[in-house]
Length: 134
Image (tube, rainbow, N blue to C red):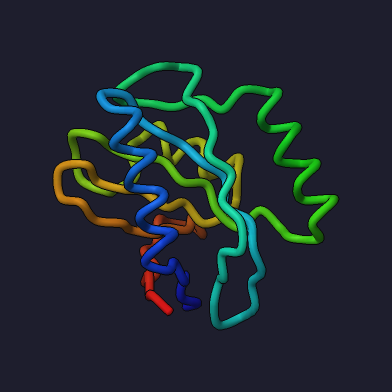
C-alpha cells in the first residue's frame, strides 16, 4: 500500500484553512506526483465550500475547472481531495464514500476535534493509507 507524504508546512496550511472555515467543512485539491510507493504533494489549491455546511462540502464548478487548468498547465496530477470534519473524527462519512467512488483519488480528512489527518482510498472497500512527513 503506498504512503501519502504531507510535509509539516502543508499540514499547517490545510489545518489553518480548516480552522478558518469553521463551523463549516473546508476543502482543497492537492496536486502532485505518485508512484507505486508514495504520493507526493507539490501544490495545494484551497477551495471554498459553496455548500457552507458543517457536515458536507461542495467545490464550485468554476474552481473545479480552475483545478483542471492547473493540472494541464503544471504537468501535475490531482492526487487527493482534502476536506475537514470540524466536529467529528477523520473517517469517511456515507456521503464521502459515495463521492470517493466518483472521484477515485486519495481522500485526506482532517478532524477538527482531534487535530489529526487521515488518508483513505476506495478500492472495493475503504482502506486507510499512512501519512508521513518528509
